[in-house]
Length: 259
Image (cartoon, rainbow, N blue to C red; front, side, top):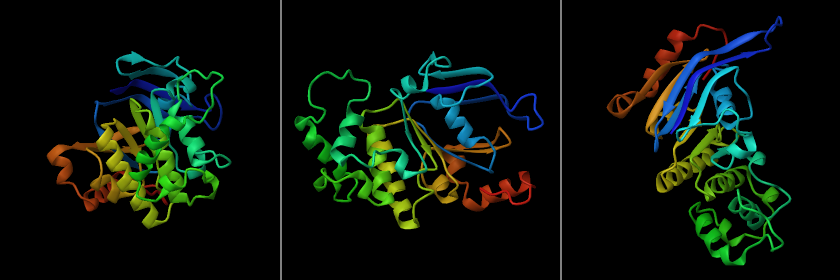
């Protein structure tokens, strides 16, 4: 369970560029939920992920993960509990290392490093089994440099790496936005499969309304630092793309604003 309680966040305080984004913002996501987050540019979607991951501090309020407040926990320590896949496929993998080496690093997250070899051959079959889930043939390319893979392949690898050691929470930061439509659909299908099979509580920011409708268990819409729509269950199943667009158009009057 992740909970944001009474979060306040202002950018550039005391300057001409001061901008209050969150005022007493609260959101709770229960264990096992897969939440899709949509909203206008500048609505606070990615800032919310940054606050949860620890890459951005809050002015006040509480961030609670599995019942424990983590405000003072550094981002690298939060990474032991929180997995994240970024929009840029290059951010989730090391291009100069092989697929095997990338997976080994992910597999050793949170473990102490001794004087043993970094590549554990006993885990090689396990890595193959995880890559087989992707259906991309990467299980037969363990010695291939990650930097030579396509964007879709690298993003799929980043997804496996982020969930190899099952996280308490998975953050998906527009992780299909930089891919072509076919690759994006493949990665989204893989995401859905991995999240369901490993029963990972997930929070996905997306600009793709179809993904927000077809995937996950709950959809929220944000606007100017507030949740203006929160649907799940039967209500969500009866809410279509046109419904989201209608709501968005009603609340967003700024020229050029887009999902």
